[in-house]
Image 1 (tube, helix red, strand yellow):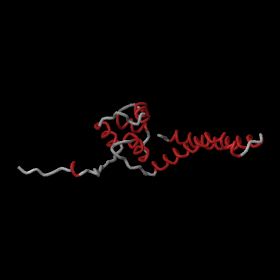
Image 2 (cartoon, rainbow, N blue to C red):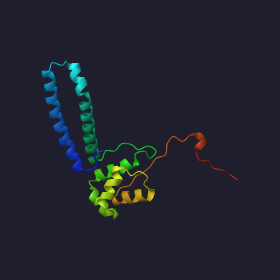
Image 3 (cartoon, rainbow, N blue to C red):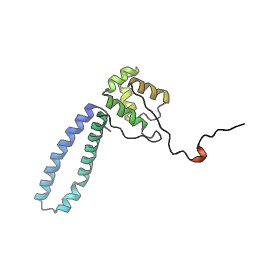
Image 4 (cartoon, rainbow, N blue to C red):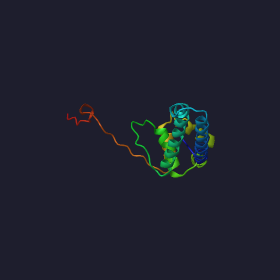
Length: 151
């Protein structure tokens, strides 16, 4: 996951350089007389990695536009916190300042996707980013629905 503008710009540059190298590699392989299938087998791993990087770029660009994936059962909550920061246009340095922690602490937390974060800490981060998250409970089975008990 791309977490900041420096990583974003670096990844964009890397994808461009990789595309050029791939084209050169294909040309070199063609000159050796390999078939299209053989060239494909040789270049598939590079193409796969290239596509993965492009997806990360697209994901970061979606986050900057404020487009989020739906969260289920809090899986990916740490990733959501990073996404919200990106969407709000807040740098790791700015968030650290708002939280009263070091920038390296925010960087480390985000790299670990806030694994093991407390609810209190998550609330402080959300407040620092000036966002509110709402939840919805769905798919409760009949036996699990709250019942009114009369005495």
